[in-house]
Length: 308
Ligand SMILES: [Zn+2]
Image: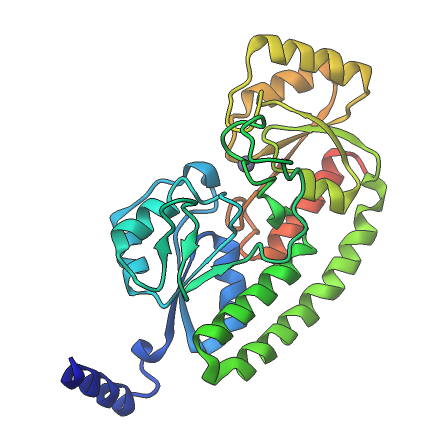
């Protein structure tokens, strides 16, 4: 074992700039790949898991994910159980001591785990662990990546995580974080101004993934097309929704691109509300390759559909 350790130290010494010397990081979703790349710079190589067009609650697992997780020094994830459909199972099979699934909570356990939700103000947090909101949001609403302001917490958590795992380069990660925030902060101020006309606009979404977007834009989301998170709409629910939308003068329907277009189109026909298509992850729609581009594209699509 010691011989092996010596051999790998020697190997690293001979190739200090080789790809193998980079910190291998896996990020669960595309915008976390993007922000990890920004904060990690040349020091890290980042692999992603979910495709942006997928439903984060139903990511299709591939054997290559196990290999990526097995080799990684760190895994960066949104947390709040949103990746529980795929991450605990993958971590179990990947057998990486730096990132194991907690047998009780299924959360990531170990020095390589970077939970981006640390410090985020969680909305719809239940008083006690409850499945009243369906099976998918037991720890409160996990879709905080749709509030652009939470990009700051995400980037800070990634910088802190990388510095913990690779303390020799902590100053580099801190510097990259500062550069990223210097780009993000003025964008947030600009988007806040752009979003002003959306304040008070009543809307429904397909899935309950919009409370954080509502908090940022001022859009008043009154209901969802789904019965509960993860529970498909019933004809009775849709009929009641039409009534509610007419009564409350709901003028906007938000369809997340991964959901079926039929129910939103039918509701639009019944109520005269306009449909805005948004992405819930980067790489979900054209021009949404990064966290910043996704935030901007979603806002512009909402403004356009709302006629503002
Ligand atoms: Zn959800």
